[in-house]
Each structure stands twice: as C-alpha cells, then as structure tokens.
Image 1: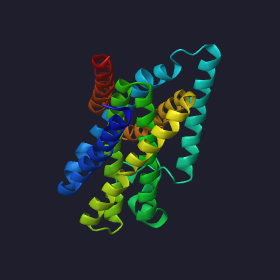
Image 2 (image 1 turned 120 degrees about the vertical axis):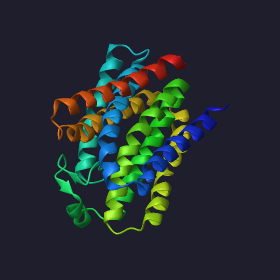
Image 3 (image 1 turned 135 degrees about the vertical axis):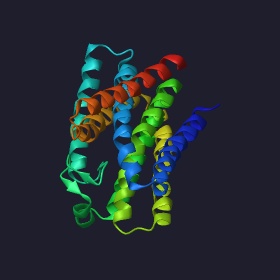
Image 4 (image 1 turned 90 degrees about the vertical axis):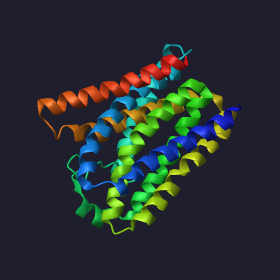
Length: 260
C-alpha cells in the first residue's frame, strides 16, 4: 500500500472516529456526559504525553548530532509558546466542560465572546494541523503514523465533546451540529494530503514538523487538559485520574512496541 493511501486512510480515521464518538453525546443525557468526560480527559492526557515522549521526539532526534538535538528541542520549546499565543488569540480553544474554570470561561460567556462560527473555525484549523502531524509521522515511519493517529483520536473526543456542548448551548439544532462537526473534521484529510506533497518534497523539514507535533501534544495535555483534573481533589478521583493517564501512556507504549 502506498504511503499516500496510508495517510488518507488514517487521517480519515482520525477525523471520523473522533467526530462520530463525540457526536454520540447527542444521544446521551447530561449526567452521563458529566461522568464520562473527566475520564476521557485523563486518558487523553496519557496518550498525548506517551505519543510525544515515546514516539514523536525520539523519531525527530533519530540520527541527529548534538547540534541537531539542540535545534529540535528549541523547536519544541518555540512550538509550546506558539500554541500558547494561538490559544490567547482564540484560534485554538479547548474547553471540556460547561463551566471551564481553567480558562475562566463558562457557557454563557462563551455564547457572547466566542460564537458558534468561531468554534467551528478554530476546530477546522485544529483538525487541519492534526492532518499535517499525522502525515509527517507517516513520512517518518508507518508505525509512528499509527501511534500518532491513536493519540489524535484520544484527544479529539473530549475536545469535540466540548465544542458540541457549546454549539448546542449557542442554539444550534442537533442535526446541524452533527453535520457541521463532521465537515469540520474532514479538514484533517486536507492537512494530511497537503503535508504529504510538501514534506515529500522537503524531507529535511520532517523532523521539525514532528517536533511541532510533540509541542502540540505536550501543550494540549499540560495546559488545556491537565488543569481540568485539578477541579477534583479527592484521593479517589486522583487515583482514578492517575490510573487512566498511565493507561493512556501504556497503550501508546504497547502499540508502538508491538508495531516495531
């Protein structure tokens, strides 16, 4: 199977599985969503950190000398700062509950300051970048591409759940939310195909794209998702969170080890 077909299949998988799983929220009660979402966030943290530290960064640094390693770690650092600025500009917002204390935004404020259109634009940009990251991983190693797709799906589900909640509370009909969410997710395919042709032509850029991917995963896990877990301080909740984080890391490790 050609590399482009691998990228098409797995960017489509990353787009549709996350979107369809999150769209299942339209069939669930608010109480069920409230119980499910924190667990998905914990699992996503583990899978993102596992993919970044066990997959993306080692592959980005493979075969580099000390100077190359310094350049790649510098790109990771710059990437984290860039994602911080993007989120500040409201191009990249992840809110995973109706009242997101981590960002100081609740749904009522979101309705006034971030319209449904902005949510969809931000989601489309995010999914486009996810497609680029998946393609860069496949261009490096097919097994890394599969692991990266797994991590993308894991963090897409809680993000999409948050976006759907905001759209519903912004007055969008459920059927319209479902269609718009699926259309927004398809930008992952666009990003993947574009990255295939660009990065195939400029292979030397691939390690740095992997470094940006790692920065993205680390930033999302530590800045956007992790603060949500601090809202539950009970020992039992902390133990559950750690278990799910380790499960996410463990699954990434097992998938990566099995494929290699």
